[in-house]
Image (tube, rainbow, N blue to C red; front, side, top):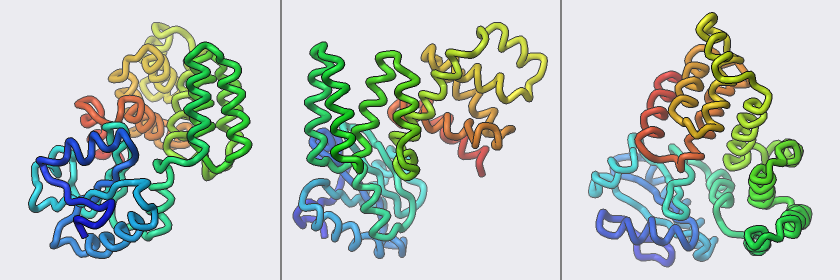
Length: 287
């Protein structure tokens, strides 16, 4: 199927251009597969159908991991099939194993541009030009006009947070339907906002560290310390505390440790030595 319109074969030579550079124009769906992996053969035609149906709104790149071992290793492919979606030069989503067509469509739709995205672009232009309220109001109206585009409240929430209007951002995001709050961009934004809100009301760091030294099982204190570290851009300290929650207090805050770590990974672009190290540690703790 390589060579069909919107479907290409990925190699070590063309990956930087075909995947990373093209992802600046739109989403690139990279399907890592191999001849010996049975589920891959079920997945390939489904992805090809979707690529045809979407008519170029995303690019499908198939990478044979037996032939392109270096790429598979570079992107951490440990099982097959696995799909990695790239946007703006970064891997933004990962899908493991065979998934039916409706589920694949749901995930791909998160990253495929919509007509209402043009209003996001215009609202951001106004905001950056100093017309803050006009930009925010345009986003609020766009959210009403296209309630299915989760990117609109995500951008509006980020801008409200940048303005220090944390309560307004929380009310906006918490008021979204359950299925929209489950979108990774929204759920991670909510987790980040939760950290900020916790940090705003937390005691100072020295007092919290003294309390943790007296009782290392105090999950609330550990979460507060993680929030303060995150707000100070001390990502490693934040993840160290969150990992402790994953290891020792899974029930705390509806799995706040795991959700918090995923939010930090996203803040760091889902890549880098720190993310790789703590992702492996989190995986070990969960399994």
